[in-house]
Image (cartoon, rainbow, N blue to C red; front, side, top):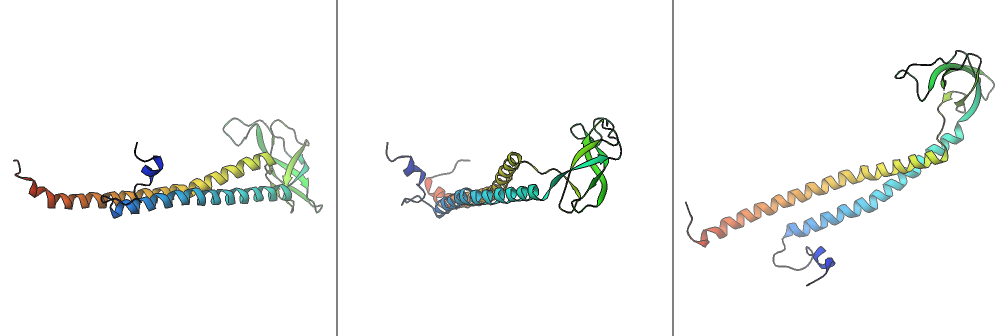
Length: 192
């Protein structure tokens, strides 16, 4: 066997009388796409994951569980309505960190009667908010955000690389056609 796998992989950069400019350009396009996807994708993924993790940590620091009292009962809601995982929206009353009383709508377990005590989540101003994700859920979501960001970068870069390679193929085909038009008449008579 003449040459190894590495030699065959780098054929576009080796000196060769049959090597065309388009072959060298294509090699650089492929290399650039791989570098941008590998390095840029990793960097974008890490930054997005870190930003998401910080946002979730901030949510855990700013949101607090407080006791509330149901103002209205949380009747069982038929599937497909506003029930979420056997929870339904109900009016609740709670006291904000500054001591003021508030009333609002929160998701609570279904089947509770008015006057029942429930736990709701509020922000630093006492407004109702959703429960922040725990550390495990936040880590999983941060990894997913990071992966999505990396794929979001990789998709367009690979697409642009494919478009450039398609254009280089078109240039090669056009050059072959022009060269054939020059060479073919000297090969003898034509049939037909």
